Image 1 (cartoon, rainbow, N blue to C red):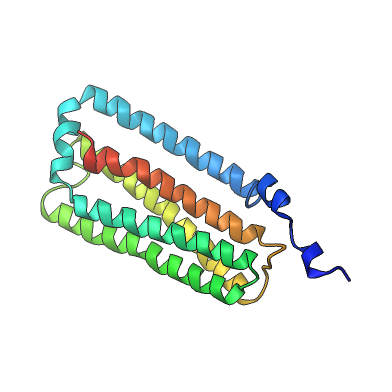
Image 2: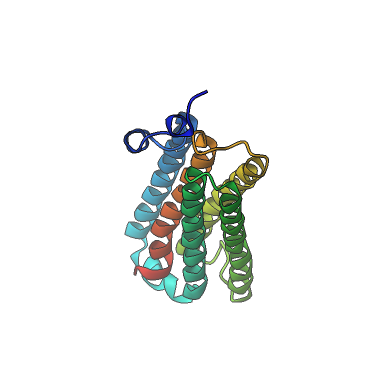
Amino acid sequence: MRPVEDALPSLEDEAARIPGNRGIWVGIFCVLVEFLLLFSVYFIAKAHHPEAFRTGPDKLLTVAGTAITLLLLSSGYCMVKAIAAMRAERPRICLRWIALAIVLGCGYPVVKFFEIRWNIAHGIDGQAGIFYTAYYYLTLNHLVHVFWGLLGLLWVAVRTAFGVYSAADHSGLEAAAVYWHTTDVIWLVIFPFFYVLR
């Protein structure tokens, strides 16, 4: 039987390999292409309706967009800590970080729910103009991907609880974390487009 040190990947191996697995990177590529097309539509619409996109953010709740940003970034940080804990052979600590990532991630749909209720109460629905049509389409599409990410986090939390992952083999955990970080990055583009830029 090999010593534990030999079973663990070396620092050089960790630095050279791509986290996760090929399947998740194919999925991420598809998601990025999808949002690249959606962002292209955003810029085309903005070029044709500059006034709508200049005044549109004024009616949105910037505090809601900021809260979502903080929740997603904090949740992403938790997944970084979860991976670090698993690499240190501390699965219980890893599971706690994953659980916290899920709780913070679930804050996003909660904030979005109240934001949409506020919007509708103030006459901001998908029919309120081209800016708001683009806003709902992009943000709700992103929310769907966040739900998929949360399901992935739940799945790896269960597998972590059952001891499936180890310091030597945790590519499934990394795959979920990489996808989750992708939703963070996409939101960091969406947020200024609708809440900040004029």
